[in-house]
Length: 256
Length: 371
Ligand code: SF4
Image: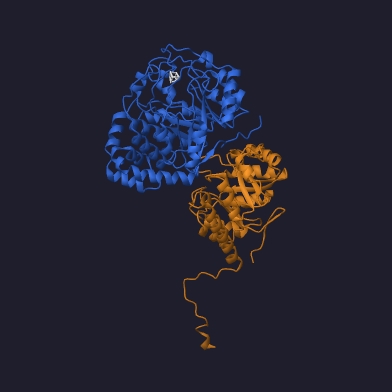
């Protein structure tokens, strides 16, 4: 039960990935992240001073239990994203990057064209590329072709807490994908996370729902449990949904 | 529509104002129930009929802001580079008719101010000048940006309106955002308060955000100076301007500031008073209109007001500001553009924010481009 998740050369016990934004303090951020037992934690390069070890956020993330996943949030083009990834590889000594290119600063919706371009280039440069994208099944296949290690389609606009508004498309993506599918953005409650896992998502990424809750540490634990429960249910194979009553033995067998 | 002026010219100030005053309790209730508000809803929220719903608006505004921006507040500091100005603006201490000693910072002086601000922790900086093209024209501004670009992640300017090409040059040099307030959208009042100098050209100023959008600037800050004319109509036109820009220049981020007239040398009494309650109403209305908008409050406002407003929709604030060139370390005694109200030190403001359970964000931007 609860198989490990493999991305590139890493194995994860936890299928809950978390983010570092929006917490009221770095101390609370760290406590919450540890309570979530998340093993991959995304941090916005634009928010931290990557060359400074004493940076408030980075110093709090300096913990052996935490793998950092730098994200390129804030960039508008493939060119900028590649530059950001190279900077972070050098400063943070990780070739993992969450590729986020959103030229739209209001809803932070990802640019599919620039993302594909950047992904192709970054894979060639030896990065483990985790692209944040719209729930677009065709784009997912194209990204897979250029060699990304997973896809991160959104469930709803970032920070909206609205849940899996893109469910129909996520189901197609999950069905077709040969790389792990991590549902990113929109997950606002542990029940949403559990639902994503039941659908067969390989992991979920949660930030706002934890950071902005009244009690982030407790909420982090709730997500941890929900993700585990959802995964267990998926592995156990959910019973089919049916509108009609099913008789336990055939009603017409007397005819034989 | 080729620019905002074409839309703006279809509006009439008086009928717009009347339409705001005509809003009813039912309009306000309706607006408060909606998830996506339009400009008519915005009018209802800023109308006199909206006043009894202030608490409800504040609650909603707080909730939305928290969801969108988390428990955070961004810090920035203004740095005045020059008080030279060729314009007459009736409300400003730097106006050409004011006989004050003029000063423009040299490179060495700029760097001295920078050292002071960096020590305080600032990483987002706002460069301010008057409008004196011979001394503080595009070359001076460009030089200042190049001089400090390695020291700050985020450089914003509040200077005279420039041409598209000039903005492109500054963006290339590392500029992130431009603040350009229309002061008032009332044409005649605008003329009255800007009788002389380049700034007296209302249309050129009105067209500035369009030029910025075309230059693909990262962020544009809009606003009106409250006190010159009716704040409700001015705010409506600001919102109209904002929505036009958002649709057209969708890659650009927008922020709104809420400057109220402050005492200064040669003082002008506000024609219209905007009370604290009015300002809260307006800030909440903007938040309800657009959950993604950055809303900024400066040290023009009082300590007490700022302590409370940080929870009601605001996303960035300044602290310990000096509104005179060299005010931090070079020439602390020179004449200010206006008096600030919240005189607390950066440390005290940070302490206040932390006590309010807010994370202070010093850095929220980086220019990821090869230079
Ligand atoms: S507001 Fe600006 S343009 Fe007008 S006088 Fe003051 S510095 Fe000059």
